[in-house]
Amino acid sequence: DGLYAAVLEEIFPKGEEWISGEDDDLPPEERLHRFVRGLAEEIYTQSTGQIAQKWAIFLREMAKPSQNLDLIVQHQVQPRANELREILTLLLGPGTPDQSLAYCSSNIWALMLDHLLTQPILDRLTPHRPNLGLDVEDFVDHVFRFALGGINAVKHSA
Image 1: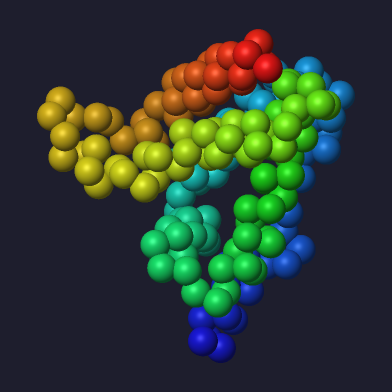
Image 2: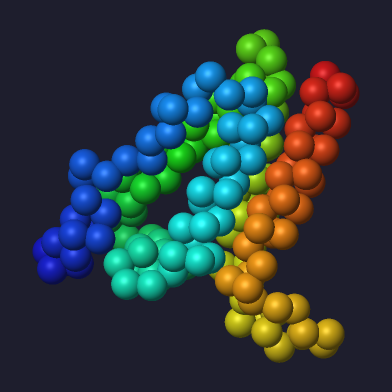
C-alpha cells in the first residue's frame, strides 16, 4: 500500500492542477469547447509516458477503488470537475438546481471517457470503429455540439 501510494504521489503530483483561468473572459460556449479539447488531447493524443500511466491507473481505480482514490480525485478530477461546473453554471444560469448541474457534468464526463473505457470492444465491432487518436478534433467537435445541444435542452425545459 505504501509503495502504491508513493507511485500515485509521483504520477499525480500535489502541485499539478487543471488551470485554465486565462479562459475566464471567453464566452461559456468557447470555454466548454476548450475544456473538451484539453481533456480529449490529454486522454487521446498525449497518451504516452507519464500521462498514459495516469490514465491507466485512473481506469484501474475506477474498476477497483483503493484507499488511495481520494488522492486521484483531489489531484486529477476535482479541479476539472470544478471548472466544468463553473462553465455549466454560466451556460445554464445561476439558479440551476445542483442535480441538473450534476447530471450535465456526468453526461459530459461519460462522453469524454467512453472511448477510453470501451476502445478494446470498439476495436472488435463490425463495422470497425476507428481509434480516436487519429481524429481527435472531429471527436472534440462532436462532443461539444452534442453536449451543448443537451445543455440547451435542459436549459429550455427548466
